[in-house]
Length: 157
Image 1 (tube, rainbow, N blue to C red):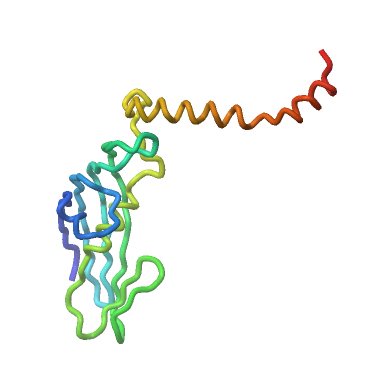
Image 2: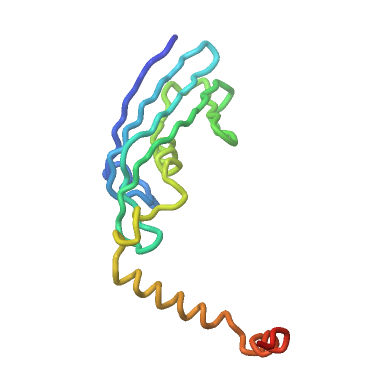
């Protein structure tokens, strides 16, 4: 009973075990506080570290700082199952909890929605040039000459 602390450091070897991981290289530290009670376990996760993912703009590797907190409740029941959210139910024959899937998910939840180099100058120049050219083509396509003619009728300068 009481509080117990655990520390895990995840690197690329951990993420190789998962088929669709967005994280390639990493050094992610998990600090886990386990509060053991009579009827349940409460696990508080703190995530800190760096992970290498693909840049959203140029698709080159970029190192992202991570920071995240999450919580998992482990209750005891008739059979082992998971519920919606952060509740895991352990059956009477279970005596250990595999946290690997939760570490994987919480690592990915710590990633920001936008994963890009801090400045455009840090991105791959060739890719940025291609994107700029594509944006110019799209801008040209946006104007329909029929509407331009109508605009001239409404605003004769």
